[in-house]
Amino acid sequence: MNPFEIGIVGGTGGIGRWFAAFFASEGYPVHVVGRNTDLTLRDLAERCRVVIVAVPIGVTQEVIHRVGPLLDPGALLMDLTSFKAAPVRAMLDASAAEVIGCHPLFGPDVPSLEGQNVAICPARGERWLPWLRDRLEKNGARIVETTPERHDRMMALVQALNHLDTIVLGLTLREAGVSPADLEPFTTPIFRMKAAIVEKVFGASPRLYAELIAGNPHTDELLAIYETQLARLKDLLARKDIDGLAAALNPGKGSP
Amino acid sequence: MNPFEIGIVGGTGGIGRWFAAFFASEGYPVHVVGRNTDLTLRDLAERCRVVIVAVPIGVTQEVIHRVGPLLDPGALLMDLTSFKAAPVRAMLDASAAEVIGCHPLFGPDVPSLEGQNVAICPARGERWLPWLRDRLEKNGARIVETTPERHDRMMALVQALNHLDTIVLGLTLREAGVSPADLEPFTTPIFRMKAAIVEKVFGASPRLYAELIAGNPHTDELLAIYETQLARLKDLLARKDIDGLAAALNPGKGSP
Image (tube, rainbow over all chains, first blue to last red; front, side):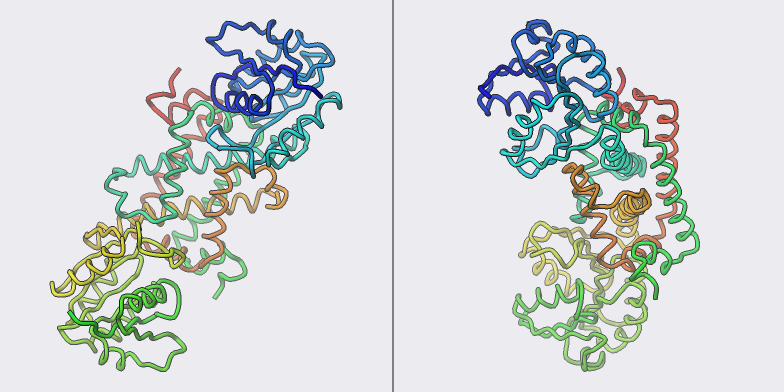
């Protein structure tokens, strides 16, 4: 397949910009549409065989419904959103093009695809899938092909639960009445790792993290498990049950 | 001060062994007493000018009360426990020696003192403090001199709260019904960092972590804040209040 033009809606920031640079480095002419670019979605659809939607979650479906109908059946419509069920459904509804849902499981701060995971949900057509896999795999990415539903279920753990845990820690540290500067000389390596994650989640893009948590249909279920486990720990602590606490950590080693 | 002999009770494992190797590399003859060594505490106290107690938290006070009375006023009695109030009080009660409470804020897996924090609580005498500071600082440690009470209050955040947060996450992941192998292809860099911390806390020494949490007098207070913050997030999620959630993360940026 000869190089062809690739269009990225939302390609001026975040992971969209990252993929614009990636495809450019792979030798493809890349065009981006952002809030402040002159190119229209119609221009993009006419020039590009591959159109990638990389806008914030909250406007993804709207953008898909605007750009999807402009693509012909031989083109590829792909999104990079952190959820897959709703965007893939929207792409299938809005367009006659081939459809692949894609979730790069990393942020725009990684230097390359090497060792990074990418989830893909092929949804319509078979022409573009080998091309996409080749581009990603030859640059060191590990691909997991899955259904949108399974993807979103896994993200409830990897993103919603994980970030919730980080956020509760961050809010508690903020409320505890000790300044980061006072705490710093007392920090351990593990605490510094956790504090760096807290800083990243709190600092980078609050809305993105809020959407990852609030938008996942499985968050409530995991939050309920989280509360149950917290209550279990609280109960062991109230009884100063160190053996029980150690056993909870490691059923094999904890009992005396 | 010429090299003299240093004794470490609990020097056959963990941080005790680490410091045995450290002082040996500094040119001091080091003797260790462990559960399976022939040397008695009396032998150790007779030969060594510095005696360091590095046994598990649960038996620290008992060991201090056994070795403390054997030391003369010119010697140094020091402990390496993760709490400072109770061990320092026990050392002052049990011994006429100089007393320093010391908490190396790292585990035995770090390669050197470079960049690591060490909290010290000088409690009796002034002869040994400069020697200890010199040994630690010349090898790159950052010393924080503090009171036992302030140290323990900081550890409620750095250890008890931090590890509690890790443990609730680990237990929830365990209960969520997805195997680590199934989850692995879907992991992000942040998730892998968190999972590595979970693995460390759950795998290494359940009893140590249980004691760090259950033994800190401030844990209950932080657990109450943690529960309040979790309830606050749960409430925002129940209302699908993404703006509110983003605002909680970053009051400055979260509001639309």
